Image (tube, rainbow, N blue to C red; front, side, top):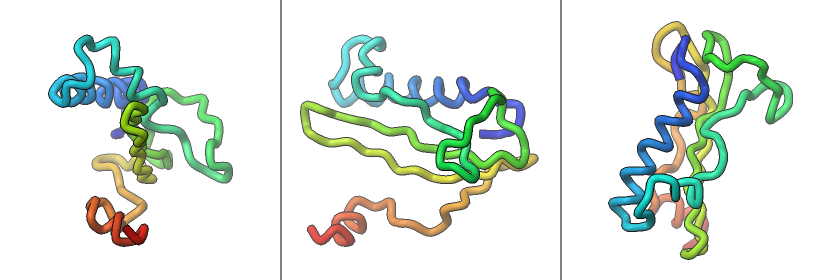
Length: 113
């Protein structure tokens, strides 16, 4: 999510990652099956409204976007989607969420499990 990168390239990077990961987990046999587990985009713009419309297809400095590569395994009854808010800068993207729980044990403890 750097300047000059097309939003569709970021989404394709997620799809390419899931192709390998879902094959390794033996959830898919063919790359076309990824859409069974990943069926929305990785990012949308963020502004005054949660889903501010964005007519730009290339990341530009100053944009605030989400990064949320969800994964849904219906046969197991689970879905995972952690959303980070990101500021596109001239160089490295800046994670606006900061310190948050990402460890499974920490999340389960918070949820009272």
